[in-house]
Structures are given as C-alpha cells and as structure tokens.
Picture 1 (tube, one colour):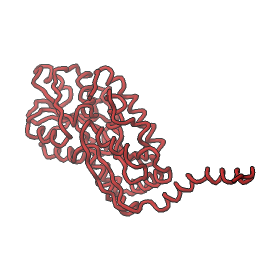
Picture 2: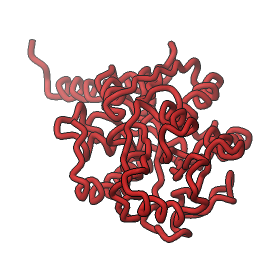
Picture 3: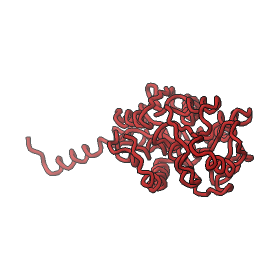
Length: 329
C-alpha cells in the first residue's frame, strides 16, 4: 500500500504524539493499586522515621503505600531493586545521600548507576548526624572526648550503620579531623543494633542520624549527645552545640532523604508524587512532627532540586572517600 506525502506526515505526527498521550493517560488513572516504597535499610533509624509517617500521609493524597525494608550492601540492595523495577510509579525508593554516594563513589562493582537508573522525584527532608557517647565516658564536650580518646589509644570504639554508610563516613571524617586514628570503627547492620550496644556500653561512641528516638534517649540520660553536625543549632534541640562551635568546622554534614523512581517513569507520575509530598509537608502539624524528630522539611523540593542536591553530596564526599581509599565491595 502506498501513502501520499500528506498521509505519511499525518501518520508520523500521530505516532510521535502517542508516547505523550500514553504518559498523560497513565497519570490520569494513577494510582490504581498500592505503591511500594522501598527503604534500603533494616527497620530503625532515620529512613524508617521518615518512611512510615510519609506513607500514612499519602493515604489521602495517593492511596495505600506499603513500606518494604530491603537492607544490605550499604543500601545498595534496596536501591538496585527499585532501579530494576518496572518504571510505572508503583515501586519507588526512599533514597538520598547514602545510597547515591555509595554507588557513585564506594563501589568498584556498583549494582546500578544512581544517575542513569533512578529519576529523583523530590526530597522529603534533610537531617544531620551527632556524636553520642555512653554515659560512662568521662567527657561532657567534644573537646574532652577527643582528649580522652588520645589519652586512651585503642580503648575507644564507635558504631555505625554499615561500612560505607554516611554514619561511617562521618565517623571517619571525625577521626581524621580530631587526629584520633586509634578509635576503632564497629560496623552494624543498621543503626538500631548499634544503638542497643551503645546503651548497654558494648560500644562507647556512636555517630547516628539525629532522630526523635536519639533525642528521647538523650533526655532520659541513657546516652549523651555531645554535638550535632548541622551548620546551626537545631530547633528541636537548641541546647546541643554544633561541631563547628566546638572547634571542628569540617564536621558539618547534612543528609538528604527523598523519593526516587526507576528511570523512564512517566514525568506526570513523578510530578504527581512530588506534588503530593509538597502538599503533605505544607501541613503545619506534619512539618512540626518532622522538626521535633530532628529533620528539616524540604518544603519546595522537586525533581530538579533533588537532583542538584544529590550531585552536591557526591562532590562533598568525593575527597573524603578518596583520602580514605574506601571501597565496600
């Protein structure tokens, strides 16, 4: 069958318009079933503290969100599972600084490419870390802790949530800045078990993300929090000084946590999830809950802003990882 030039151009134009029409049609009906939110860490810690409240808020905005923890590989296993999922908006990742930096900088054999295989949706919040010690440690300030570690080489150990985690990198950055290489790092499968050992005195120091749980443990006297890694003191705990205030300005570290989808997810769906997230964060009660938990809500985040934040995280940690010569595979 032969086509005239006019018929051919008409058919070509129609074919070119099909993907756009398809994306919009999908977005208009999305979602029709529960959304799977993968948390790339075991239960407990900052990611869980964000995941479950966000899932609850989405019930009225998107529908049912099922949270699934897939830990292991320094967040790589969970992130890779999402990267390989169908790009239909029904499997998304609660990712951010940790999974992104791990695959970009710490893997000689990465399980996925965080830039090419995942599309940022929006940041939910940022959080920071803290230096916490068991009450038996005779140090009330970071300066005293550094002096104690130097006076007792090999006796101090600190826990983190896994080799290559931002907790680990922050701990090693602290050791470098404080010139205390003898402090021994103890890796755990998640921050929950590490916190249990800190409370019991099995380890003397921990570098966890500052969450509501950490603040409660501090207020109850079960742990002592010496500093936070934020640029300024936190609204939720203004009594805790920053590392910069106590003489270690290089220990200013923030962690971005947000949503990502498999590359190829229709843009209208990505924007729909981002808009639902912004709507939730605009609610004063939800925002206040995050602040009290040690988070800073990302009120106006979108795909482009989240992508830029992740690129800045890689730039921040590149010289640290290079100096440590760290690989986690």
